[in-house]
Image (cartoon, rainbow, N blue to C red; front, top):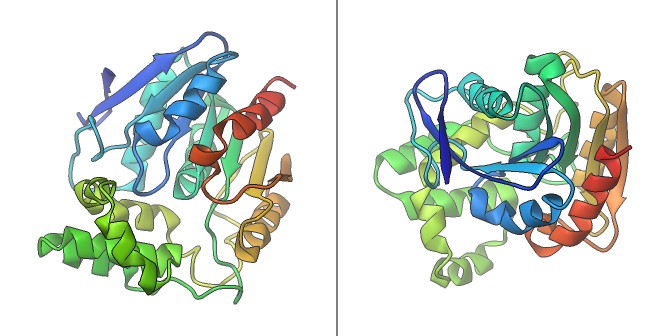
Length: 266
C-alpha cells in the first residue's frame, strides 16, 4: 500500500488503481480498505480509486486524542494526493464522515455518493444509548475488545443476541477485535444522530450533487433517514439499490459500482 502523512503526523495507508476522475472510498465502522477492495476494482475501470485504511485500522497509524476533524484532515490529504479535488463515496457511518468532509472541504469535493447513513430519526428502531461512546471506550480500556465488538453489533447495528455467538466463532471476528478501539471513533462521527430525533439542520452545508442510496431490502429506518437527509441537501437525490441491503458494498459491489459510475459520469 502507498502511504501519506496527515496533518497531525498520522500515517494513512491506501491503494490507488485505475485512471480517470478521483474517487475516495470511506469505510464504515469495523471495516478497513479490504472491505471495499472489490468495489474499488469495479470503479477503477472508469476512475482513479483511492481506497484507504481509516486511522487506527489496518496499515494506517493512529494519533490520540481522536477527533472527527482529524479524520477530515486525512481525507483532505488524500484529495491533495489526487490533485486537489475528488469525488467521495462513504457507506454507513463512513457516509456520515463523507458528509462532514464534503461540508468542511467545499469545492475540494466534486460529487458525493453515500450509502445507507445509519441515522435513527424516529421510533422505527431503538435509539443508541447516550453513553454509547463512553461504554465502548470503557470496554476497550479494560482490554475487553471482543465485548466492545459485541456491544457495537447488538446496540448500534441491532444484531439479535442469539446471533453473536456464531459471529464470534467466525475467523473474521479477529478483525473486529483488532479495530475495536475505532468503534468509538465512528460513534463520535455519528454524534447525536442516532437518538431517534430529527436530523440537525445546521450540521452540513453541502452544495454539490449528492446521491443518498439505500438498499431496497434494508430496514425502514434506513429509508426514513435517507429521505430526511435528502430534504436537507439542495442538490440531493434519494435512490434505492434493487434487491440489496446494508451489505451491498461487499455483497453487491458490481451493482453498487454501476450506480456510482452512472452518477459520477453525468
